[in-house]
Length: 527
Image 1 (cartoon, rainbow, N blue to C red):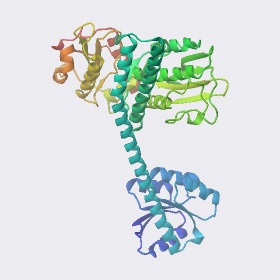
Image 2: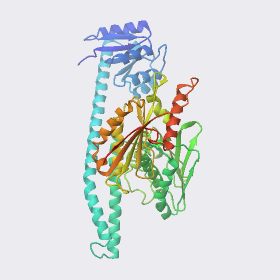
Image 3: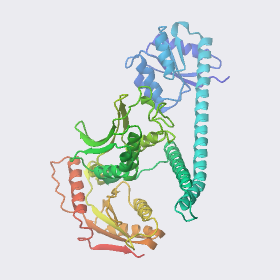
Image 4: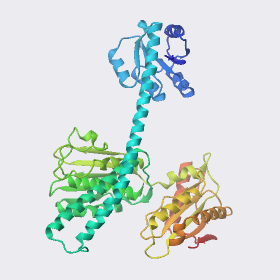
C-alpha cells in the first residue's frame, strides 16, 4: 500500500520533532518531512502547498487545544490530520475525531511500525470520505436532474387538465349537475395544489444547485407588504383572521428583487393563516434596528398553535413538515420555508423563527437597505481617489402600444442584461431599476468617462440593442447622456464622503426627471 510522499509535522518541541522524523524516515518507503514549530508557520505552509498528511501537536506557542486542529482543518479540509499528544486525553481525542481529525496518537507509544500504520490508515480513510462525498454529490445531482425533468414533463398534462376542467365548469361543454360541479371543483383544487408542488420542486432544485437567480431593484418595502396583504386578505377573511401591518414610516428603500420578496411574504403569511385558528390574528411588521442601520427587518407574527421545540430547529429544512399540523393544513411538500430562506440568503439577509407552543410564532428576516454610495464606490474610485469625470447615461424603454405586445417585462429584463454587457464593470455601473407605475422603463448608467468619449458607449449600446428582436417589434429605445455636474467635493472630505456626495447628486438628477434635458447627445432605436 502506498505511503504518503510528504508529511507536514507541526511540533514545537525539538526532541519530539526529531523522534517523529526519525520514525518516519525508518518507515518503508521513507517519507519527506517538513517540520514547523508554530501554527502560523503551518498555515502559511498549507497555503503554499498541500501535504499528503499533517501531524499536529495541540500545544504550540501561538495556539493551544481544540482551536489548533480546528484552524488546521479549516485551512486544509481535504488533508488528513493526525494529532500527536503527550497526554492520553480521551475526551479531547473524541472531540478531535468528531471535528474531522483522523487519529489521535500518544507520543510515548509511537514506534516506526505504529506510526506507519496510523498514517496509512489516515490517508485511506480520508480518501474514502472524499469518494463518499463525491458519490453523494453525484447522487444529489442525478436526483435534482430527475426532479427537474419530471416536474417539467408534468406541467403540460396538468395545464391541459386545468383548462378542460375549467371549460366544463364554465358550461362551455354543456350543462352539468350540481353534484358534478362539486366534483370538478375538487379536481380543480387538486390540480392547483399539484401545480404548486411542481413549482416548489423546481425552485428547490434551482436553489440547491445554485441556479436560483434574483434581480435586485430599489423598492419601497411598504408597498410590497401592502400588495402581499391584498393578495392574502380573502384567505384571512375566510377564517375571520385579522390581517394587519405595522410599518415604520422612517424605513428607507431596500435593495431586493420585488417578485422574490413578494413570494417570501406570501409564503410566510399563507403559513401563518393556515396554522392560526379562526378569529386569530396575523401581523406583518417592518422596522429598523438601531444596532444594524444597513438592513430593514421584517416579521410575520401569528396567534396560532406555535411550533414545538423539537420541530423549530428543523423548520427550514428541505421537505420537513411538522408532525402535528392542523387538519387540512398540510397541502404542500414542506419546501416553502426552505425556498423562502434561500431567497433571503441570496439577498445577503438571514431568516429565523421564534415560537412558543400555544402562543403563536414569529418568522423574521432582514434585507439590505438600498445604498447607491455602496454600489458606486468600487467603480468611481481608483487608488483611493475619485475618477476625474462622470456621465449619466439613460436608456428609456417604451412599448409601442398602451398594452404591450408579448412579454414586455421579459423584454425589459433582456435589455437590462444587454446593457450590463456594454459597460466596463470596473468603471461603469448599471443602476438597479426603479419600480415604475407604468410600462415605460428607464435604465440608468453611471459611467466614469466624459462627454467627448460617451458617443462610443452609446453606439455600442445601440448596436447591442438592435440584436434584441423583441424590442424592435414591440417597443422603442431612446438613449441620452449628460455630464454629472454640481457635485460639491471638499478636500477635507474622506473618500467615503466624496462617494456619498456623488451618489446624492446622481439620485437628485434621476429623481428630478432631467433625462436628456442638458444632453447634446441622444439617439433612438427605431422599432
